[in-house]
Image (cartoon, rainbow, N blue to C red; front, side):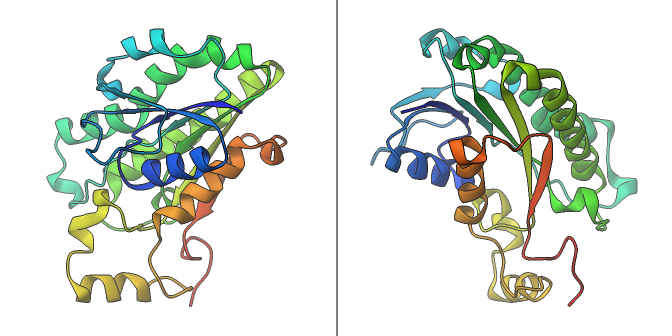
Length: 234
């Protein structure tokens, strides 16, 4: 049994990942800004905290050893480049990069104690594949990819693996405004070579693998879960 921490465990990919890991018999600690759902969730213990903005007191209640950390918070701030404000850029960077940095810095001692641990971050297919109106999110998620590789190199000798998942459009609450009509869903599916949009379980399954013993020789990677749109032309 592993001790696994998921930031953003009550929604989308994070929620599905918590369900998968719990079903495998692991102890899952979840953190989100929202109260725990009334019908419960798969986490062993839930903390209502704004980890993105530095509310990290919940670390005092975690075990001395953490075998895995997943940082799920993200943003989809799509708008023309000339309409991006300084605050827009800073907000995306704080959510996607600085929040992850804060959490990882706090978690490092407990990850080291585990001897072998995995950290999973989230990028986007838009970093490697230029897409209009994605300047702000792609810039901040590009920083996530650089952070992933740098930390993988720095902590390899400590037994901590760092990898990032780069999804395309996925059917989660975060993307609800992009998929709120049948026409939008059909159009989005048609843009992907595999002919559908992503499910939260697609990315969650890869995250679970990267945290597992079977994924213990993988580090410093950015892996696309994108229906082929990042590398194929239909």
